Length: 194
Image (cartoon, rainbow, N blue to C red):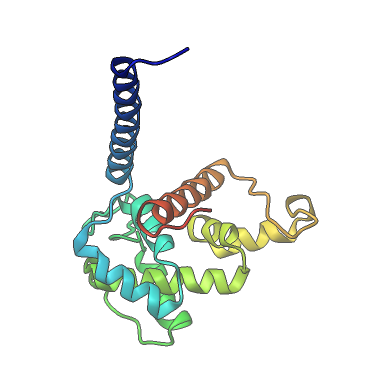
């Protein structure tokens, strides 16, 4: 079958429109995802600095801030957790004295984004260093070290590969949220494809 020039032009236009709509669809989908997983410019420097200081991927800190506070530095939870990384005064005191070897500080400092991110990053780094598995570190951030340590002592909750099967649905859902956010931030902003 021979194509005449009009049919050929129409076919080429159809192909170009299809490709154009494909790019447009991808652009819209990416814009929607970036709205769901934003990187507020005013936090970029703080997150980059804290991640570098404590040897963490930036994607991990972005995921925590998104999941914990949705970027609200003045947020206080019903449990008294403060700021971007939702640190309680007790946790802040523990980070200061036990993890960083500093004197205890006023929890009012947690309202400052740079301070909150610094100490939150110190905690995440410490948990990853302790457990060596991101999922377990995320679980400990949510449920506490004592709880996760107890789970790890239960042979029914640990796989032959040493992975923790998280028995608490809230903690498991939290870990999934963090994992998904780390993945999305990596793909959307850091060109990392898992």
